[in-house]
Length: 320
Ligand code: F6P
Image (cartoon, rainbow, N blue to C red; front, side, top):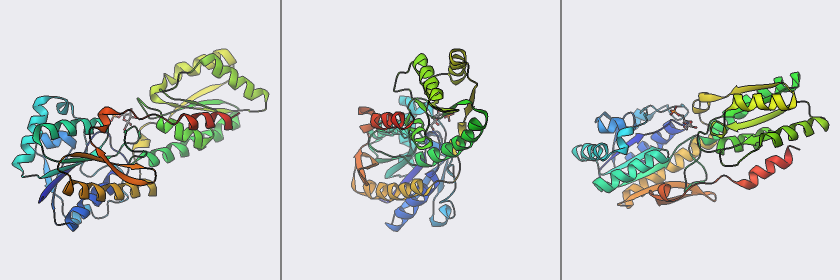
């Protein structure tokens, strides 16, 4: 193996830059050349690239976003797009590809491997932490801490006004952020797409809380768990309490990565290079039981990652 390529794909996540640095520096350390394709798989199909040398990744370890940029790429869901991406890799004499992204990017990467037989290693980076085969993803811890800071601020105003707040955090399909931040912020109620809820029961729980002296309450919900404003109206109608909604939104995708996100990026980046040099196939790196692991890349298509229901129950117990 002489020359490898790297891209960042899908939604950005804090720590992607640290991971780029880790991949580029590790690859050069082991004697490889590195080409960076810009704007995810879209840029790969368009052959938008730049040479990544040691100094091209200087100073970026603590930056949010990705200096290689990223884009959602519909073409990678088509045969034509995948074929084109394979041709570009071959034309550039690329011996292996490292892709930093989420499950959608890994599915595209898997198809690219099947069509081109160019080895590929996926590095899980997504604030949603919804990638099977890894307990943690680059950016998740940062997003949770960003949301936590917002919720702590909202708690101040909620308690001053004796209000109920519904705080919507990211997670279009999965509730990993909502669960982690709900538990960490002491939220009274957590709503995630994976668990069915009943609004009359929630209203009763809020009323019960008032009876036992709670003056304000926080409901943390994943964006995919329902319509925050409609839920607020219903709770207000049933309980008569003042209910406000606050959407944390895209600030969860930005900012400097936490130490946890950077160190995951460092470990994943280095392991991805070593794996690519050895394995002539499609792999992903992950984090399980306190160490870096390597799985087949099609793991993401065969498994579904579930939230930890014990944490969900614990949050409920601690919020009575
Ligand atoms: O990065 C994951 C995620 O933040 C989801 O939780 C969210 O719904 C989605 O990306 C939105 O991203 P975009 O607007 O870039 O498609």
